[in-house]
Amino acid sequence: MDVSSLFSPAAVAARLRAGSKKHLLTSLADIAARAYGIDAAQALAAVQEREKLG
Image (cartoon, rainbow, N blue to C red; front, side, top):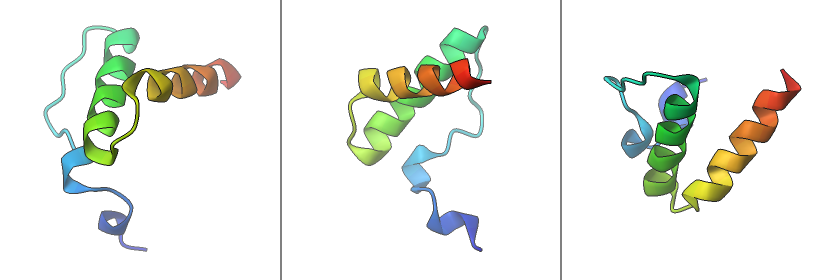
């Protein structure tokens, strides 16, 4: 499987820095929102729900 077929180049943040897990997840949700045209708040909520599962 070619990983490049899974992600838009706009969804890649090679030098993303985050001071906390919360900041990291928020940044990733913002990147996903811009790259895929989705709502950042909904993306963040979905990731946070997944994080609760462990």
